[in-house]
Image (tube, rainbow, N blue to C red; front, side, top):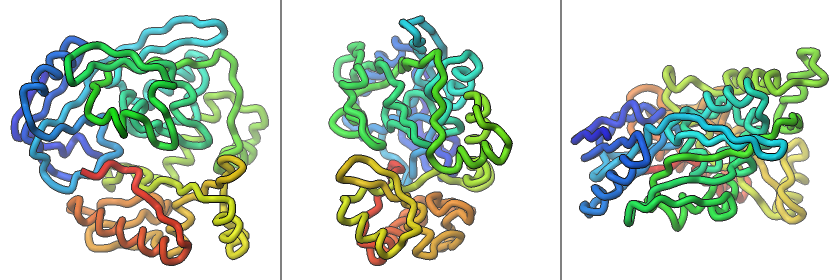
Length: 337
């Protein structure tokens, strides 16, 4: 186990915010996670459990303990036409996706190039291009912070929703995730009707794509749209796409017939937050040391030397404009601390 005092979190958040925590603990095994749980039980201080920091905005130094998983490793089990892949929570998510595609294990390819770590996928229910982690999560293993016991949760136990889970709600700070098991298919079924995946494949002359080709297209699209955090600090999509009622959607569509949208169910429709923000004129604009990316309005960036309060001020201004123009509330996807 690794332990530091007065520790900089600069390399643990992709926004590039140089905030510190009072104590930093990192576990590399289930036994070390249990040791961390015992240490936390003896301290009455704030707790923050992080992954790769790609969904995190630090607005000040953290006067408590930050915990991070460094558990690595992969284990596979065949399961009636599918594969159960058990992965250490500290593995890099996109490296896992690449491994899956290389081995012919399908279901994660549309989630290519999403930053972060495996453990966070079970907390955040990451999603992109019509896919969500919840659709492939089989079970989640964790250590209870309360008593150090080992717990195993099914996907149903976690109550996954759009960018939500019990780990973000009533289970927040109660468990240290050690492993996530995914159920992946050995038969490929392409999911192409979200965003411009299909049109990009057609442009390349590909009519029946492999999972590798779909992964490559998604990686190229994401790289064209999203800034590199090493160059310009960011946390990817800053806002969740709002889900609105059928009545609200039809009202907006009458005024904006070119508005992109995606059905959720018979009573609700999802509208891209990036489109709403763009319509308010924010794409490419800056506010102090924070800005909106010039190719993707959903992404807020650190233009250099920004602190968390700068990003929050920009976020609040954008939310106010979207509310005033469309009557829709948009909410941050990023965890603001």
